[in-house]
Length: 202
Image (cartoon, rainbow, N blue to C red; front, top):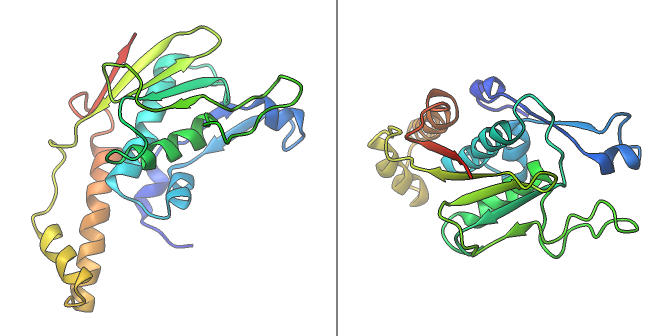
């Protein structure tokens, strides 16, 4: 699989998953996810997928500092409904990384490792998303603003041409490069921009 080189520059997320250890998927339960894993899950790389990955990275850092986050023991809440805007896409990525699931998720073993009802929508929160450690009940609010992340004015024009079958091979290549350049800007160039990624401890 070939993909833009910048994807390898995005820091990975390491977590401890007790279910993984319990069932012997690996020896110590430590799992490492990359942005490429999020891309594979979504089937594409875009500012929304990049933002979902990086919001989770920053939220977990705020909640656990240098400790390994415990996958499956994190509550994820969204202010919007699952079908509103990009909430569903973001939730899929955040669920992959945190192990949080809805009522169709893994129901556990004898009362342990239950992943259900830990991914909630239309919650009464004052941010776009909230992550809560279920062991300490510490929470962080996360909001996103991409207005300050530059985007080439050519993207819209080229997108229309590509969708209408009017783009040349050169146009299509330029579109893809410009599209991924904005993804890179979101997840790397603005990774620590507090105007873009707003993280607040509750």
